[in-house]
Length: 222
Image (cartoon, rainbow, N blue to C red; front, top):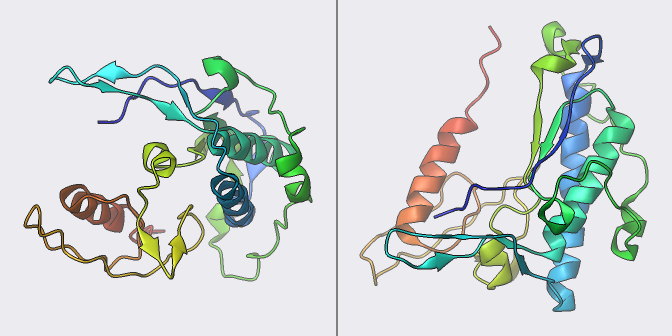
């Protein structure tokens, strides 16, 4: 169960702003790389700064915390700061907010972000044959959703799947291949053939990769 009551940071679009989608994708790829470094550094520090934003009880009466960690806060601040700087007209909806309240201005004063504040390279994908209709899209037709660390509970409890000898902490911008062993305790054989990262649980894992494999199918441009 995932608690859906969240603080949201949002930025509205200027109706006249035009967005080049290739620049948005370039920004997301670069930010995924930088966010991954931030997340791994938080994990290595052993100080995750976990807080409960306010969970809920499931149907069995078990309390499910809505966990937020230092990694969530740092990555959201990093992403929102960069997007507002380089793509100021892009509508933005972000999950976390300091203290559980709406906070429009990201805080980038934390030393952990200091090495990740160089301007984003937005032209690294321009040489690909982008359709003309994606080169100038009205900003009001695009919304960028920021979930800084998908799987915060698993991250906080050291329960992420392991590949190549180390924890994988972000799955945006790159696809990692691995084969997961079957979970005999539940009798559910599962194998990742889509290059998707998920937390441990055979049934949830199967559902997740099947859903994502559909959602990331090539976008029809016609």
